[in-house]
Each structure stands twice: as structure tokens, then as C-alpha cells.
Length: 198
Image (cartoon, rainbow, N blue to C red; front, side, top):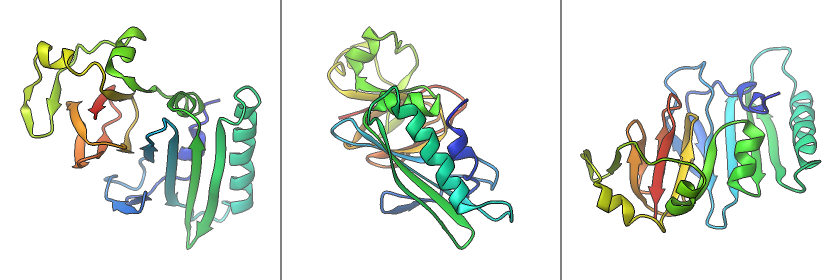
């Protein structure tokens, strides 16, 4: 079972709250979404918030479900995921989870999510055969020589729609990724997105 049901069961928000900022991300009340923060040490923090209005929704049941999914994952991935918070207030629910690694986040959510250097991504089978654009010049793709110079830089590769908060400034990204500020982007979810950062 995809553990992303934790997200989809509560996220119907048009506005997400994450990492101390408000992000107007989702255009309708039906879309699933999340705010994911990649930290310098490689760990990942995820915050989701959404409508929780139906009479059959119950905070205790939600919390039990989330903790059960986390415990199940941790049986084979020791201490990989921790529940930071589950709360319901004024017909809104939020869940906060911490992951030891980006790989744990991807495995838990059953979504493609890679974080490492550009060189290591290539060694793991990721092909940089899509145009990458610098935020300052979105109309001009980086050349092959420019891409070669990025080998030691970090990259996040993901296939879901989310707001992604990075520990350093974005250098370049694939088409469809939107820069919110110098270290925050949103990804479209209808394709694999590459975001290279310092």
C-alpha cells in the first residue's frame, strides 16, 4: 500500500503552511500537496496541511493511522521516520514527519525522490538528458560543458507535485519547476523534475 495515503487523506488545502512561511501553491481544493524541506545533513522534513471537515473524520484515528504506518516502515528501516506532530484545529489537519534520508522519504511515500551530487545521480542511473535552465535565464538551456561543471553540486530529482525547500540556492532546474525564492521551488508532478543547487 502506498504510504502517500497519509498525505492524500488529509491534503485538500489551497494554502500550505510550511517552514515558517505561507506558500500559495495549490489551485483547487482537491489537489494533494506537501511542503518538503531537504536539510544540509541530508535528512528530510515534510509538512502537510489540509481540510478535515467531514463528520466521520477523527483526529485520534488519523494519528493512529499515521503512527501505524511509521512503525510498519521502521520495522525494516530502523529509526528512519519519526512523527513530529499530528494536529487538528478549526477543521484543518496537519501532519509533520521527519525522515533520516531522502531515500527514506521516497520509499515511505512510494515516490521517486533522489538527493545527492550530480555525479552520483549519474552513477545511479539518472540521465541528465533534459534541458536545465538557470533561474536568471529561463529561456536558455545550459550547455553540455556547463552541465559537466556541476558534477559536485547537489541535485534533487522527484516526480511529485510539492513545494521543495532546499538548504542552498538553486542553480538550475528543469522546465515546469517554479522558483518561489532563491532556495524554494514548486514542482509540477506530471514529469520528473531535476533541481540542482549549491
